[in-house]
Length: 451
Image 1 (cartoon, rainbow, N blue to C red):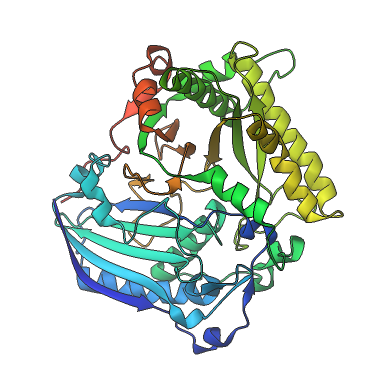
Image 2: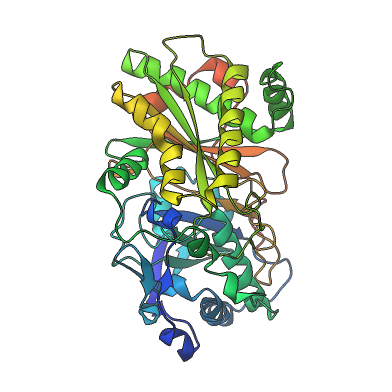
């Protein structure tokens, strides 16, 4: 397949008034978030029996995108001094491309290196915060009439829920519906609850960056867990201390277990390990926050384990994950009345203690279940046929060991996008016990492209 760029421009909010708005304050949680792009890939087959005017469609997408930026104006700006976002007239890189080939053939090969041509920039790698846009867009039109809308979201100001809310607003404007935000005053609630620091302590910023971003050869694979596999994992994760494990906890514990085992074989030794599970704060705060609030309203539930001291048992790991989530819930109830820096340090103290003992395996887990699965992102052609996350193999300074959990669209089950160092991944993807539960996926589940 060949990808040809047909246009590149900077798209700005359509309202001139937006350009004059005061800087948008980051929250403390944003300040501690890694500066990387997270890629969201929405695949749309050509509507059956419809007349598809490509020129009109592309013009409509660009116009509705500009309208959506009026609502989410910080996404058109640039970060200033790690404290706020301003310069909204800078705009968002917006690329339109033609792809020779069929959409269905493309998504069946999403492990292939050429797919990176569908993206406007490199995802999951460290980016300069002061000069990088908060968003980057590429609209890819295939010969068959299918479209792939690729959105790179800066994790400095957007979590999965913010990204989902923005995409639904953009899609609503494109359909001609009302994409207005009900209460724009709630956009910056994150910075009001967690005010930013004038300057971040160097040990904290270095710690956070070192947790998520590392040098080395990384490899990403996708694994599918159907209903039966998830039920099996929930049953195996049960214990007297934890009788009703959720699918997220059971699956996170399972991936953590086998990543530790693979790391043991790859390195030739046991190492202390930590799992950092991102937890959504919105439903946990005293006042439930709207989905469209901009920022990283997340915290980290940290579970630690030393496999040199006891056997790796799934039910025990699941209990540790559940306990770490309970600890976060307790901290949140106090954090709104206490020093937020103390709140942040409490999350990472267990990792600091582990790292002080020597080399440690750090794994991150981000669940997009019930958060960002492509549902309702309907630009007027129906919901996406598929929604995907893609990552190339890389040696760059990038996200290290990471599990991303997402829905499998209209099919029941969960897809885990797993990134590990190349040697550890090679061992994991050939582990017969792991593969007895996890099914390798060569591409997202997609119905054949309509032509």
